[in-house]
Image 1: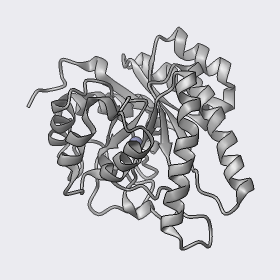
Image 2: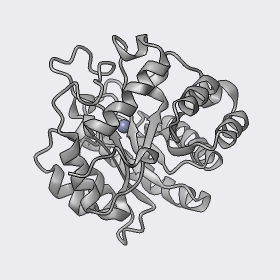
Image 3: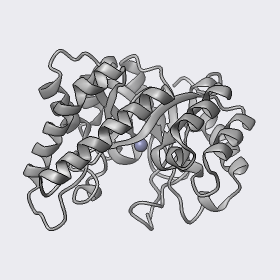
Length: 282
Ligand code: ZN
C-alpha cells in the first residue's frame, strides 16, 4: 500500500472538522498555519461572512476548495417546497462556482415529515438532480452525490449506497460525462458488501471526492460522534486503494463531526492530528 506521507498536498480539511472552534476566517487561518493546502467549505460558514469575502479569503490564502457543502435536500411535501429547494440549489451552484470548488456536494434529502413514501422521495431526488444538472454544467460546477449511511434514510438522505447513486448518474447522464458523480465518504459506505465493485463501476469520471474519518465502536451519537482516522474500525487504506485503482488522485478530505471530542480541542491540535493520521493510517 502506498503511503500518503509523501503527498501532503492531497490533504484537505472539511470545515466541519473545526466548525465549533472556527468561523470562516479563523478556519482559513488555522488551515494555512498548519501548512495544509485544501479546504471544503460549508454554506452556513460562508453565509456568515458573505460569499465574496469568503472567496477572497480562500483565494488570498491560495487554498484549493475540494468541495462545497452542501446542496441537495430535494424532497418536499408540496410544490412550494420543491420550488424552494430548487432556489436554494441554484444559489449553492453559484456559490460553488464563485469559491472555485471541485464540486458541489449533494446530500439528497429524506422523506418529507410525516411521509412513509420512500420510493416517492427517491423519485423526487431523481427529478431534482435532472433539473439541476444543466444549470450546474452551465456554471462549470460538478455535482457530487454523497450517499449517506442508511441510518439517515428517513431524514437526511434516501440515497444510501454508491450503487444507488450511480444508478441515478446512469439515468441522468448516461454518457458518464463526469459532470455528475459520487463523493465516497468512508463513514457512510464502509459497511457495504458491494463497495469495491461499485467503486470500480464508478470509474475515474464519476469518482469526485474521497472523505475520511472513522467509525467508532460504540458510536454514541448518530450524527456528531465520528472518529479521527485510526481510532475506529474502517480499513481506510483498503478503500483508498479501490478508489485509486480507478485513477482517483484528487484530494483526501477529513470530515469529522465530533461534539464530544474533537470539537472541544484547539483547532491547531485537531489539524496536527489530522496531518499525522493522514500520513500514517489513511
Ligand atoms: Zn462526507
